[in-house]
Image (cartoon, rainbow, N blue to C red; front, side, top):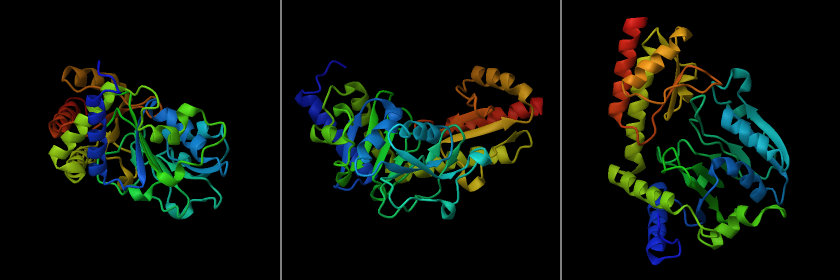
Length: 324
């Protein structure tokens, strides 16, 4: 916490953290890795500011709360085409790719691979051809292997699978570092951060250090292939418990259910407060669903052990037996 970001110790730690992340994600050499601040929400502005210099038009896919926020912010900087949307389906699915209406002159295509609130996750990476693909991976990065070369930019707030809040990861392809809009502020320009190794200003040193420890922990678990198996197992058993019950339900298209965020509703909304109170007393925390969808939501990120999912399933079965 007291270490200067210019000190040899911190510089060594920062280099090691980046090397470990590059190893985990198999990041190609023609991509810069940036450790920034401001959360993914700041990236809603930074992405268009950095990419709309040559074409002030972008395609966005609307699949829920966070992609909607990204769209709203991007409209401040250029023309936004909604290439596809699942709003009419109440954000319970991913729009079929064959119906997307992509623009040939778009500076980029933006999507949110995992929507935390609705519990919807893309089962595929969109093929956008020569148009750079930009992804907000705040909630599913490092949960499974990823072909980084399919993307122009990946950004992610740290606080789900990377480390504590305060750090934002950006992975950007080299050729996209010279496409910023003229009005892009100095501190929001990816190229400036890349030139200074993410130390254009004082970085969040403690958050960066702790993220580096998480990267080492992931390597000790067996890497992202091992994490994918664990995460799939956790999600499958929880969805199975929901699907086999007449008391709980999940409205998301089965093939597009999130591996990280599992929303579910009770047969009787009047029992929601009872469920939350009893689950909290049992040591199961933060299960209240977002106000936009109601019900419950279990976020089962990398740090959530399988035993916690088992405990939730046991509690749900007991609660159903007593109240169903």
